[in-house]
Every structure is written in C-alpha cells, then in structure tokens.
Image 1: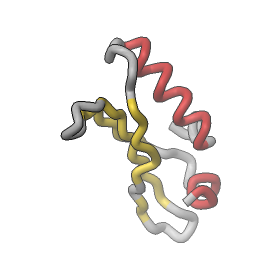
Image 2: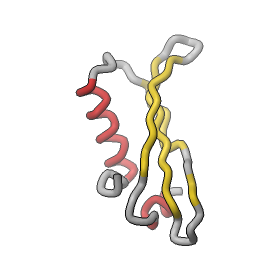
Image 3: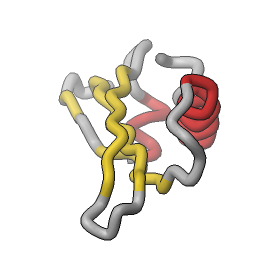
Length: 77
C-alpha cells in the first residue's frame, strides 16, 4: 500500500470519521481513495488513531495534517 500511495495518480482523496468504541474510547479513522498506475481504484483504511483531546477544529486539522504527512500524501490531497 505504501508503494501504491507513492505511485498514485496525481491525487489522493481522504475520508475521515470520528467514532467511539464500545469501551468509550474515541478514535479518528482515515481512508484514502486513489487510482494506481495500473488504473485500479483502491480505498484502504490508512489509520485508526485514538483521540485524547477535545474534537475542536484545530485539533482535527492538526491530527489530519500529521497523519497525511506521515503517510506522504499531504502534497496529493
């Protein structure tokens, strides 16, 4: 998947969701949608990360920026 993301076409689209587990822990999930050089569409879940801060706009933006930078796709969004 890491190589697919590096070689993905010009753009990667992300979808996010903030949810609460049965244990009452809060998480943010991020899914990417992209087309491989072989024209195959892929939509893997890139991360499920626990949120410990309040769900403010600033916290969510910072978390998504960190996650996309870590995955090397922030310049393809």
